[in-house]
Length: 65
Image (cartoon, rainbow, N blue to C red; front, side, top):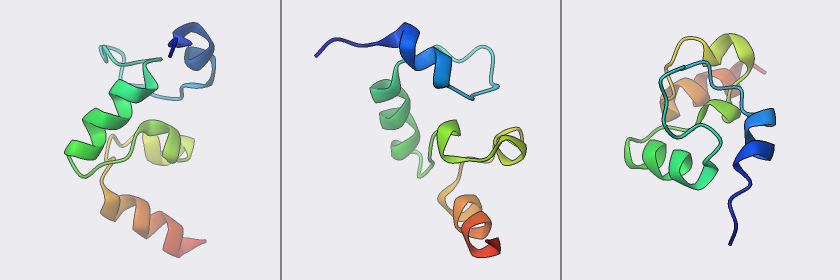
């Protein structure tokens, strides 16, 4: 499977600049799931900026809607 890094970067909303996984969705997802987190793309803009990618934070956001 070919990685579409450049295309993925266009849709990536991660604001963590030194991240080496930007645009590498499979690496990003694997990294975050191992830490009981979701990647930035699962969060709205304001929530993503907190860098709290935890399942719990995501659940709180979903409960608000």
